Amino acid sequence: MTKKVEKIVLAYSGGLDTSVILKWLREEYQCPVVAFAADIGQEEEWDKVRAKGMATGAEKVIISDLREEFVRDFVFPAFRANAIYEGSYLLGTSLARPLIAKEQVRIAEAEGADAVSHGATGKGNDQVRFELTYLALNPKLAIIAPWRIWDLNSRTKLMAYAAQHAIPVPVTKEKPYSSDENLLHISFEGGILEDPWNEPEASMFKLTCSPELAPDQPTYLEIEFQNGSPVAIDGQVYSPATLLTELNRLGGINGIGRLDMVENRFVGMKSRGVYETPGGTILRAAHRDLETITLDREVMKIRDSLVQRYSELIYNGFWFSPEMRLLQRTMDDSQQTVNGVVRLKLYKGNCTPVGRKSAQSLYQESFATFEEDQVYTQSDAGGFIRLNGLRLRINALVEKGQR
Image (cartoon, rainbow, N blue to C red):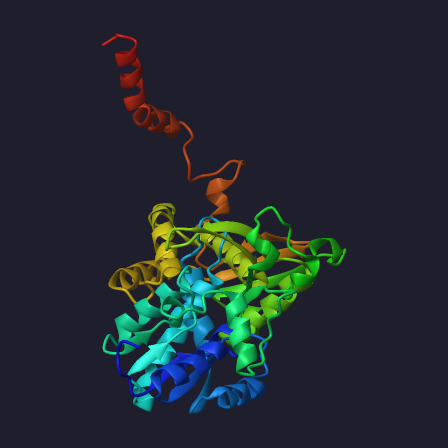
């Protein structure tokens, strides 16, 4: 212990790591610990989480329902920007961490705590995401990261500590997967997945059926957008959380949204993760398709040039940074015309847009038609091509010595 603290708020899930941390904080710091759990759509028996937290030594267990806020203020803004990390990952865990840390800071202030703690390991990205949020929102709070200061540096030691203190844990030596679940996705790491050559076991998947076992008939649906955010499915208006829940159901039935990748962590190492993101996969495909008829070409180019940077800021934990605020305003400004409906076909792991319409569509059939029209003089194309090819002609003459 390096600093005397009076009260700690712990980001608590009831799993192996945070259960051990709760007991360890009580013993190490000899002060009250408030266990805070965030409901962001994971399948959890919250009464049992509360009871376990109290039995493990918490002064109080606070469970915050953050489902609507998560989708409305974190998922939808990211999807308005078409955020994606390294071309594949839809940032399910990355988007949840700043919200959890934000609520943890709020609780610490309300409870009169002077310290916050988390269960992220010293090797992963989550430690960065949590702590950058703490620093951005309340830099006066002391930060306790047990994984960086204790000697319980393996799952084996954690399980031994849990057994010694009679702490029940859901992880066993036979199946030591680490998973993270919320309304956007579920991720799997550890166990046999640490060898990137090993195929994930079929029984591991939770949100999606195997594409091979999906229905033989396709599912069609229509998603309506307003200012880049989805508001309705097949004409029925949903709240943000319930809309994503319904897309998860439809995507899961049709085997959509599985991903197996090796990604580059912010801290420098590569990590293998397996993800299920059924609703998010559908949502991104629909949003990108609607933009093809509602976004100006040059606006789209500029926006797309910023997507990688925007996605990296989320992945690396800078959600509450000045540069993120700037990029979000830019992304949202580009979405003012992204209004309309996209029709999609879901079939055995595939999500295919098959129709789109918008009152603000920039697609005009009278301009694009191959039939005779009154808006385009085809002979004008000759001058257009010659002017755009001028630098190519000059370059060719120079290369051939024909100045």
